[in-house]
Length: 88
Image (tube, rainbow, N blue to C red; front, side):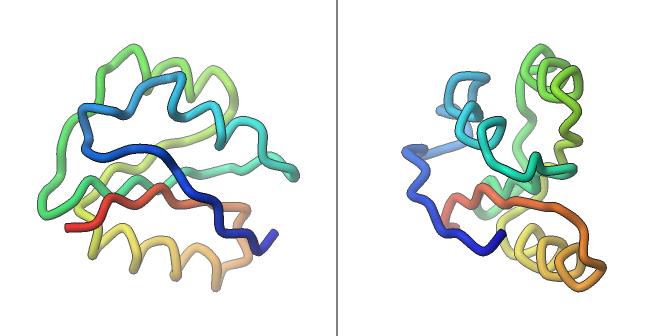
């Protein structure tokens, strides 16, 4: 429930189904994955988003500052959430 893992992603271009596999393996299974893509919101490939939804994980993509705030809000609501954050 309270873990910090190193995610080997340097930019939004590195985000793929393979790089997101870490989040699909977490127990308990997360409901929401909040992705912070740096200084600005970057779009992910639609297939990647679709495949994560098929795994039962909603993905929210934001700039990293807002992703941190969203993650904290969802944690306060006791949601099962994870964050993948790329520094701005």
